[in-house]
Length: 104
Image 1 (cartoon, rainbow, N blue to C red):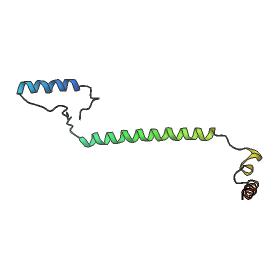
Image 2 (cartoon, rainbow, N blue to C red; image 1 turned 30 degrees about the horizontal axis):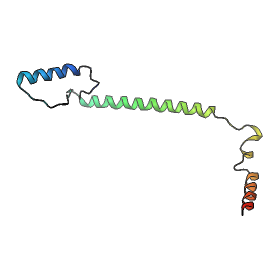
Image 3 (spheres, rainbow, N blue to C red; image 1 turned 180 degrees about the horizontal axis):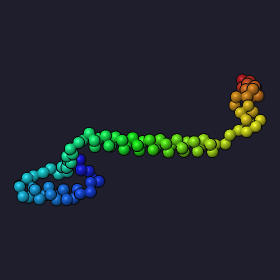
Image 4 (cartoon, helix red, strand yellow; image 1 turned 90 degrees about the vertical axis):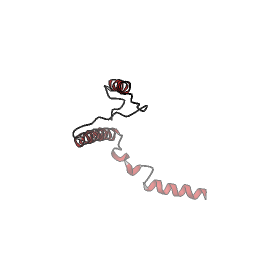
């Protein structure tokens, strides 16, 4: 179908108006203009491969950005790592239990 992005749509609309005037036709407002092709499957397959290529490029860009952000994140180093973190260490668990007991 000839959409809004079709380059020569104005000349096709002019041809429709000329045919209406010449042959006394009446066409509907906003009628769709259809482009006939000899091999519609090749057009469909071409659109499919273009869309898959765009999808693959987008996924690759997203993967690269995710790797950049993952490498840029701060990581714990040395003894101040996860074992001394507030969550998950034994000291924090016993401390939380003591705080819970004080509220009871």
